[in-house]
Length: 327
Image (cartoon, rainbow, N blue to C red; front, side):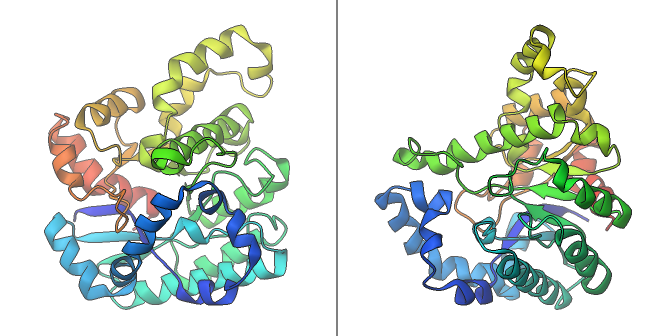
């Protein structure tokens, strides 16, 4: 079974619930995107809406992409961490119900991830348990930070412990950069902002001691880990020279590359081969970022051109995702 482990749906009820809220303009992606890029986005909305939520359209695209199964994640643009706790719990619940209902239409072809009210860390563990135990979700997508709170914040430790107890993973997926005033031009809000967010979050998980405090926590960083794998030499050098990097971990950052998971959304077979050489076997899974225009329309083609061993290609195309999401 060929599994695309990185696809999205959008929950219309969330947009309806938040319609007119002025805070939407301050979401990093909305805040920093150029007018030209925003207009390109608006022109895509009707087609994206069809592909987000109409299963016949998704199944047709899956056949074209030679994929048997999709793991469906919430749209990252609906991670509204600016919302007050009650509202954030409500919209997290709406998204989780939406994903569960979509998957229930064809569970042979789809598995679902939910989302969590990350800026309400005292309530996120219970929402995680509810979504897993009553809705059958297989894990959760979150942003690369929880509002002003970094993922290394001890306030999130009860959530990480609950996810380990539930035996479900977390997937990091940003949208835009938290401080992206210079990234409006040339769509850098996405091309540079997303992988920059991902490497910052990875540093917090590694150097902030999260992976050591919770060694059984399964974490995937989409887009091939962002800039993390390709900065690892610089990070290791800093770890050796700078005592503030060694405060919470006894191993260099490169030791943690094989404790995280990644997908193939790097668009270049040379980079995918480099990623594999850095992180090792069993850590990468096929992904497309469907249905966005920044998605890979032929992830299996990119993988085939990377020249990886046949057994690792088979793992990337299915076995790694099956184990990671307990499919």
